[in-house]
Every structure is written in structure tokens, then in C-alpha cells.
Amino acid sequence: MLESFQLFLCSDDNQFGFKKGVGSGYAIHTVCNIVDQTDQYNKAGYTANMYALDLSEAYDKVNHHAL
Image 1 (cartoon, helix red, strand yellow):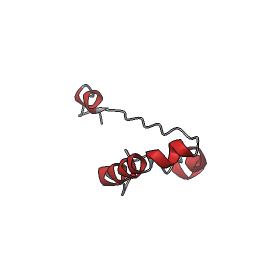
Image 2 (cartoon, rainbow, N blue to C red):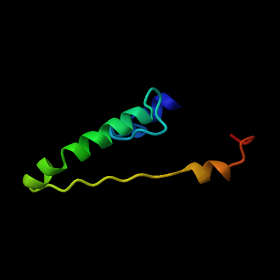
Image 3 (spheres, rainbow, N blue to C red):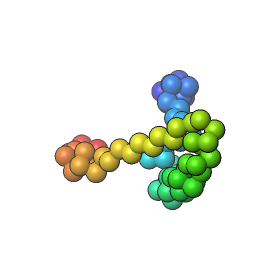
Image 4 (cartoon, one colour):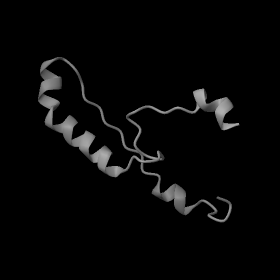
């Protein structure tokens, strides 16, 4: 079934959570690069937006035996 739906289950390269082989170190590195280059983005007329989603409480409410 995974092979059948593989085209629909791809994720963006900028997604760091819930991916095999990608940890918080990659996310921290990316955030640092964006913060360091914010002036360059602003001078070029771009806006730098960052979003973070904290799902720690969601894991606390999930039945771990069901997982």
C-alpha cells in the first residue's frame, strides 16, 4: 500500500519533524541561517517567515498503547 500512495506521501524539504534521518539539528541550523541573512532578505524586498508547531502536548494526550 505504501508503494501505491508514495507519490501522495512526500513532504517538503523544509519539514524537519517526523522524518527519518532528520533531527532538530537541521532545523536549528536552518533557523540560524535565516536569522543571519534577514538583512539580505529585507534589502532584496523579501520577508522571512518562520513557523514552529509544538506537538508535545498532543503526544501527552495520545493513547501510547494504541500507537
